[in-house]
Length: 252
Image 1 (cartoon, rainbow, N blue to C red):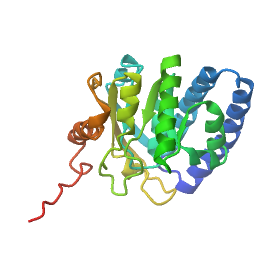
Image 2 (cartoon, rainbow, N blue to C red):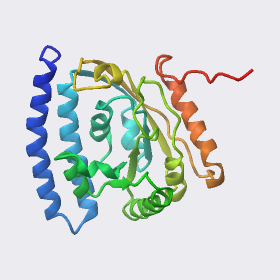
Image 3 (tube, rainbow, N blue to C red):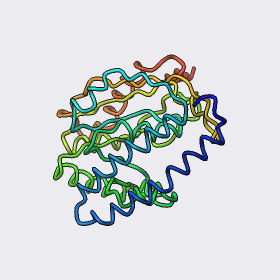
Image 4 (tube, helix red, strand yellow):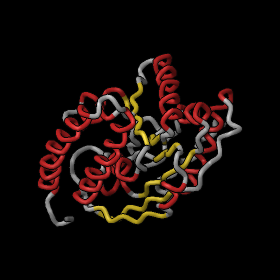
């Protein structure tokens, strides 16, 4: 696959994505009365389309402690975000019963966004703090009621350099509200396989590393930012020097 031109790989991906998302959308309509069934449908669709896109990207995967995904379920899985490929890796790796968390704008994306909208997975409005907080409270109710997991990229945006950005504290509040542990999932080298700024994919090795669960039972909302920084330090230590945050300069 690495010998196939990027534009042809993208074309193949679109030819698979459009009809498969339409089928998923139709099935989700039939399952509309059951949000849990739609969430699991989204999981299975994610495993299908995620594996296709990863293959088309020419990625050669090495997954360390893959058993830690299902073994720690339900949990809040947090991954670093430095490439468009991260999203497809995430929906492929996410355990069945795990909910993705995306910005509400995802619904505007043709085919994939429409299928996501009906899937029952979680969306959040980050434009207003009050709506974001209310959205997280609703997420917690859904997660606890159905014994679901959560998969989120807590940097809040894609890194432009591949280096880990500061983590937003939303996942901390989710952990406090649900009582779930946090499992960091480290994605190495993805930004080289699918670089920022286009649809050109280069192929190459990617290492996925599932770290040990982090207990959250003693976390407090008042110290949410500190907990986010502690998890950030754990993730940074697992990354290669190329993807670790640069040291913060201290003013003289």
